[in-house]
Image 1 (tube, rainbow, N blue to C red):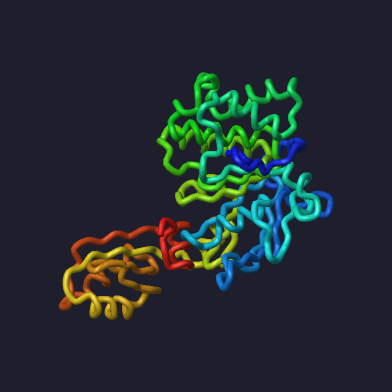
Image 2: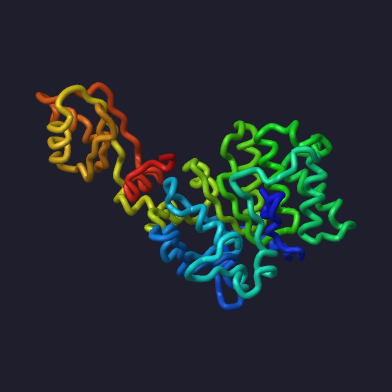
Length: 343
């Protein structure tokens, strides 16, 4: 989890001042600007608009989630936030410092963890941290102690002097996170930090992230695991086709679908007729086929409605299996984007 990659260091040479500990997100005022803000961000490639008018603020000490289907514009947005891509329109500010006007000072407040591991396999974990610490401009006397602190935070003190190529995938991701924390950034940006890791490492990463937020660090978090976002984030934005289509707390986003239940039915018979009959049942908000023998519905009070749904298709189809899922962030995401997070 480090801002630079081995081939193209992208982080500043001066360390950031650590944020003051906080137990809850502080309101942004003129005296305390957002930890990270972007407004009007746009990026296009030829005729393709990858990002259109994206904007949000992350308060000091707030954990903010960015969700979207593959190809929705998440990675392009993050690349602009950390200065790897220049936006065609809009601006990015880190604690009030404009990234375009003063990139070194703005980047000093960011710790970036990319999707891909950005470390040297032939070096030990400690040597990797020492290398990136020097890139961040940390004084040699301070760096040794800071490396020990980071190794303890990511739970790798016992493997610090082993070569990285001997680490598991989860351990590599944890040391990657450690590299981005060396300079004490005010904002930590994590892009899919638990992809492909074992359950033990995933728990360690999430525990560490929650600890950092509890100590006052601001967080931007993307993941293909909805339960992680629900666990870690105070607010969430959903991006689709390059635009922010919804933003709010978990409770506010779920309210967008009116607290509807998701009902999944497996059927045998005339699917088109069954779909039409299900759509006509009072209490059904939406219904769509999700496969040759499956239909998904959004419905009010799905458990009580289930007998009526089964009765509605009697004569044209037979329900072979049924599942009712109470409203959650996944249901909201499906309702707004028409796809699952992993599509």
